[in-house]
Image (tube, rainbow over the protein chains, first blue to last red):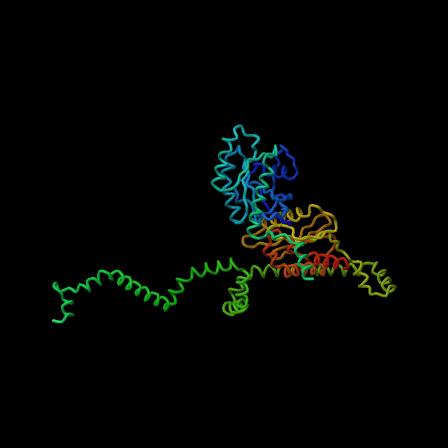
Length: 196
Length: 294
């Protein structure tokens, strides 16, 4: 079964949203910083097994939304209809972590049932991982959200953060009965044969 | 002295049975009295229409909200017969209020329809002028006579002026591509659909004036035009080159209405599953064929 989903990458400017997408979709990284204007959409497919064993192919339309000083500057129509979001912070800039609760609040106002995952990016630049990641892990615990410490540069945990989001999408789709049980062709044939 | 008198007075003059009754039943009697008062109060409340309404109003809103949330279709079925009557009554009672409420929508629809009709009229007049001045018309007339058909048919056949490259059905809320037909192989067609949504959202937000929002109708790029026809849950984007005729514009609107009517429920409840739109290809293919013949 194939499902399409709109997902958003949100967070302050220069936290590495575009780099995470570049790494996840194209397996590449550039140190050259180019600020995103408005939004840009990229596509990536992910296969995931449903609880009944059925293979679900998620076609993720990933909206890379320009980071703003305040989340209110993002047009609501960019967020509307998103099934999920990855909220990204720069582990070396505490203000980007502090901004996440209000970004989450705005996103959830528009998409109350959506799945959300946190990503603490630029892990490769940390001197003391345990101490420097404490703040985002504390926030993730407080908000009850999964959190991954990522590095777009090395690729560390990048696939995992998108997979975690896909798993959350799957749980929601199973709960909302969006995922239909696989068609049992063999049984139908058997039934027809029996009728004959 | 009778035994009754003895027991009623006793030595101290107080009836022990009465005393026992009082000890055992005081609480119950008080409770009965309270309940009596409550029953009286309830009767009064039932009789007092205003009080009853004040009590029930907040619950009714919640109840209706919950019922609509739980079984939207059932509520729609239950309320549907009343809707026509309710609207008619409202129009009879307060015409002005209804006009005020509908003006932002109807006004916009009328201005758009008038603008489009004017555009078509200008296009049609230009076509006629060009035809009259064009010397090739004489050649066409000779050809028509030779082939035994009317000049109009020859002109119509040669004015297949629109070349359609893409037809995209895009979900209004998410920007996800529901269906498409393309004359070229375009692997990233889903991304094109979503980027179109980004552009559309940006323009509509940027030029929204207060409460007055509008829909993006057309984008021109080089020789290509992207014509957007919006419906409640989706929009149709036709990427074409050439000069559209009034009949082409009409067929775009017709296609949108057909899809809206046929797939209303899956469009409303869309969660990214395109398998719910079986047969939508048929509508798009028919549209392409009709516009190829034109």
